[in-house]
Length: 407
Image (tube, rainbow, N blue to C red; front, side):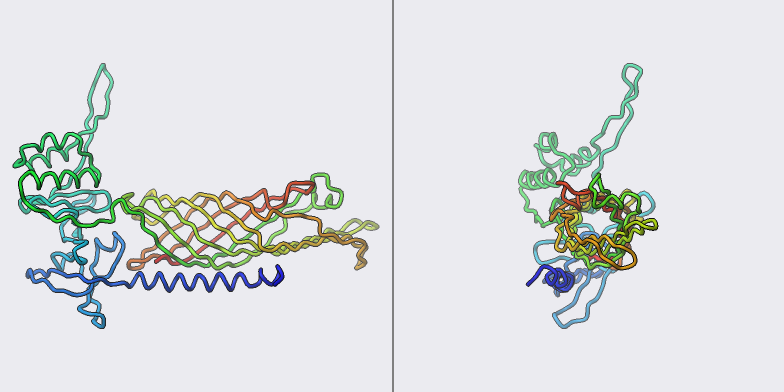
């Protein structure tokens, strides 16, 4: 199979691969495991619980009584708790936030005399039927006429009060930080100290999650080539960059840690881009004309860091590096005696089979149930499309607009 045929097959192969991943992601999104719900009357109903991400787990519980049963969705106002086997348990509580009080499902890490709960790097304890958040605060301290901010581990006082029946609690709290591993150790030691059992549940805290998606990308590119004194391509120096616009299928993979409050995500994936560039330089009367045609295709694997400065708005900033593999490069340079007599023809512009391009941009997420759609704009530039030895120099500028769906 020749290179041109391979290049033509690549969009179809990439699209087919993307559809397979979508099927897999959809299957994962609709996966159910054995679990239970506890109604407001205190009754426990066994059935199947949908597997969701952390944010969705805090808002809704999707439950059905069997494989063929109707899916019912419960908010924290309509059930007391739900669980997935013996691995996870979520309990409905009213949690204070800056704006208002919100009812949500908190992930139970430890169930015992004193219970530990978690949601997006916020930790809570329940003792004597009272829910309290574990926090730190700051206070201003004046020393030598200067004001300093000093952290106050308020959570240690809360924990010591709740665990006062353990004789060693003061010593145990000395090195306890407001982190999952440290708190779990403290709660295990506490229940051993008072001689009672406790149930330890799994949590997504500290684990890396993976989300898949598909998108359609429209990319506007400008390929600017300068001769750098190469006699065959002197005519390029007085011309504007060659431009092209193309659409591309895009497969997306995102990595994120729920414990980071959702402020950061790493995105990668695969995109197939084509570029068809043409320039015709018309010389002055009595001189030669020139024509340059470049037909190229590349597969790009981006590695982008997404940052959400205001998570609730869905707005994010994105920056990273694109790794490009050239899969097609057809180039033809012609010298012409007007109107149509070809004097010479060459294909001596060598491209790099691999090159990178720094990228940065901005985007917006819109939640759709437990999934999301997004739209973003990314600007990129590469100065290494052409091989450096004896070649003219090149600069490939790209403006990419992408809209897609993340599962």
